[in-house]
Length: 385
Image (tube, rainbow, N blue to C red; front, side, top):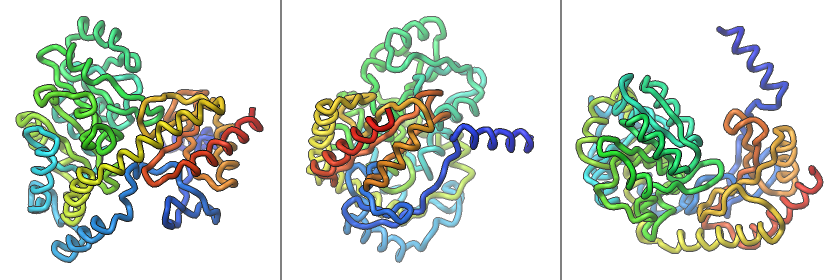
């Protein structure tokens, strides 16, 4: 087994697929130092620019002083604190659902939710572009798994008629191309017995007038929200994930999710910070308004320069398909030399010959930043054509 893994690593090196971590130094106003180069960060998921918010930092510091660094145990032993309970209650109330449970990460939440609600007798349908954590959850559940074409309601409907699924799984905003899923349409055609699980990682905090994510954006009623997984490392800029929805479903997840039961609970100080973040996301609407304005500006300016985006939906994720992995890496390096830090997404994250440059916008970017980035991207793409 080890020999095969070593061979795979060698093959990855040959094909330029090996991942590299960049230890960053952070400065104000979206600036980071990457390999001794000062650059504007265009690959962070901090969509609302909350990483340095003084009220959130102060809430976190107060939480550490009150509770200490960690929780000390799993949530079902002695690691569940009043700050956890308060955040779960306030998040569920804010979203307009019956109940919520706080996990340690989005990955743990997706795996725990799917394995708690599915088993080897279950039939699961998922969008073809679903995140790796959702696919891993389905695989670990041992359910029979069928994928429908990306955002194709016709394909989903045909599978539903032939397979009679127990679970239908989808993202709200797809993490590579930034397209929005038609969750309201999925909800309207789903069989009575099927449960819908929606990963709202890139929607929560961003979509909807109040930032309530896909449910507010597509005007879903509470009875249409079976189970929403809301990772908190993107717009909330913290860690952890909330799984929220119908009371019986959340209770089942609490009882049967091994990734909740058998892991140390999130530090209670994090929950203190999350409570403050929730208030800010609800109250400081200018952050979302600014972000939406920048997204529209980015789309228009890209079009004017002949840059083709994977999706023009109003989300902060914007990708330009390059194709060849070697070329994508070279583009990323050249753009960094000119002062912009962007993501290079390669197989197996995306299919072969689909490598892309992914750009993430946040509310603290400026229009001038975007103009400079797009001019740079256009010049570099022309040189690498």
